[in-house]
Amino acid sequence: MKCPKNHIVRVGYKTKKGIYVRPNCIKSTRYNKTMKRANENKIILASKKRKTSRAYKLAPGGPKSCQSGSMLRNAYFRKDKAFPSRCVKTKKTPEQIEYLKTRKPILLRSGTLGQFGYKNITNIPKEERIKALDKAIKKLGPLVVMRKVNILMVYSKNIPKLKKIYENDKKWIYSKYEVKSV
Image (cartoon, rainbow, N blue to C red; front, top):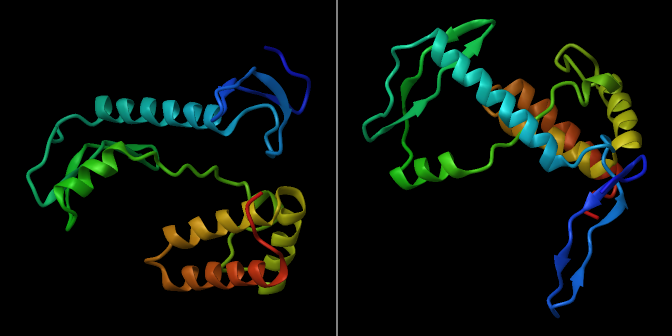
C-alpha cells in the first residue's frame, strides 16, 4: 500500500468485538514521517549486528560462553579498533542474564537533540541548554524530549556531574511543560 507524504501504513487488526479493520494510511506524528519507529529500529539493529559480526572476524579468539557469575560481552569496535568478546563479571542471576539477552535494546539516535544545540552540555551554560531544549520541544514535543533527556540521564548514572545536569534539565521540562503521553 502506497501512502501520501507524511503518512504511514497502519496494519489491519481485529477489535475486541471481532470486527476487522483494514490497513489504512494514517498521518505520522513522528519527526521522521516517512518511516515507522519499528522499521527504523530494524535497520539500526541490522547495522549493529553487521558491525558485531565484523568485529568477531577482525578480533577472533574470545570466549563463546561464560561460567556463572559472568556474562558474555560481544566483540565490539571502539575508535575503529576491534576488540574480541570477553566475559564480564556481574551480580545478576542467570534468569536476569537470560532476560537481558531476549530484551529489546533501547536505541538512541545520536544528534537528535544536538541539532538544536543541546550538545557538549558540561561546557555550555544553563540558559543555552534551556534555549536548546525549548527549540527541541517546539519541534519534537515535550514528551519525546523528556524521554530522550531521561534515557541520557540513566545512561550517565556513573558520571555524577553529567547525571545532575540531565536531572535538572528533566525537572525543568516537567516544571515548564505538561508532559503526558498522547
